[in-house]
Image (cartoon, rainbow, N blue to C red; front, side, top):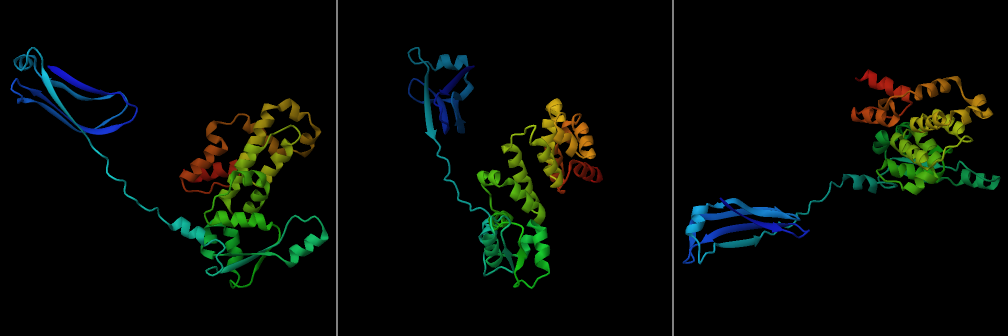
Length: 312
């Protein structure tokens, strides 16, 4: 058999139809000596053709002055015009209700946590920032805020005085589906963790925790404070990262007076366990396993392991 191939050497791709036909001496197509390829997509150095266009004996009988004439017809097939399909608008609709006073059914008045002087404290108490929200959205996104809202008539403002208005606004924006910038998360990681932990916004808390870990340089001087903070807030990733640092710098850390004096006994036990931890017991893997099962991903490593065992 005689084959015929056309090689496409361009880096761009093309969709085409190709037809090959052997011509007789009088210009007619030799019956049975044609091959058509439809809708072939060619990429760089791809090819189109057929390995069995014609037999040797047929080729010899179709020679014209010692040459085999093959007609090649190429037709570019234009791809269909893309169809515009609008995305599901629900996420934007919910985000559009952020701070929408007209449709809101709960009001929060947020004071200032950090004050530098008495005058500022007085202003914070007399001029709190007002935030309007919706119980339906808070119920799943911020359970503690929803609990606050469930015992009010929707018109009486709920006082929140231990979170700054700026942090509260960003937390509420996140609950409505907004995305917080990486720089803001890194610069305000602890304040966000504190607020999200208090108000039950779990995923924001864990996102801020991940940014805190990524942007923090662990040292002998700060590891104990970070370890205790992670333990207090149930920030398992932060706690694990601090323990990893301790495990890698055992001599230096253990030699510091602050670590020996401040480390609770149960943390020392956790540290010893962490030194021989399997990858499956790492915080990231535990959280993913819980998430895949639709379970709560907040809590200490021990809480996550127990929850996985209960639902295995």
